[in-house]
Image 1 (cartoon, one colour):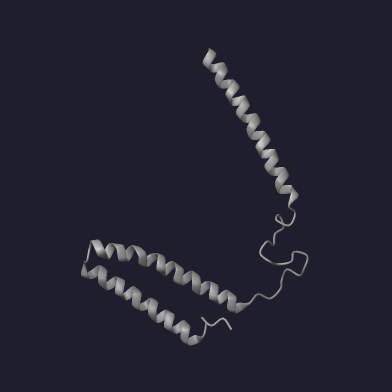
Image 2: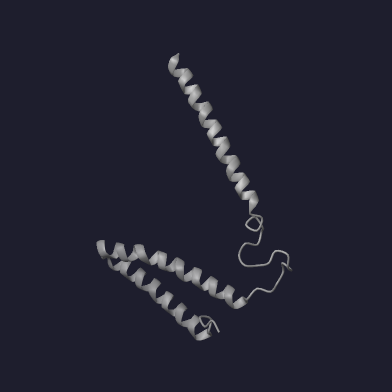
Length: 116
């Protein structure tokens, strides 16, 4: 019986502490109105929201995402190739690398990688 009342007291104290901390966090977040605005990335929230977006920046960001995912796929291939050097795995890895290099050369020739 004594341990149950000690446990109940512990739960009450824990709830009070959680309430105090959550109210302090909510009060702190309400103080920063600019941080709570929907445009936090350099856009002025009081200005026209449908401003033209740089298509060059968008294309470069998409190219970065594509090559970033391909690099993430390459890392396990290299580690796997060290532990199991099979010809099928090597040929599929080389095919993947050749497609990656051809895509990079195509983007370079199109001028998509030039920022200016």
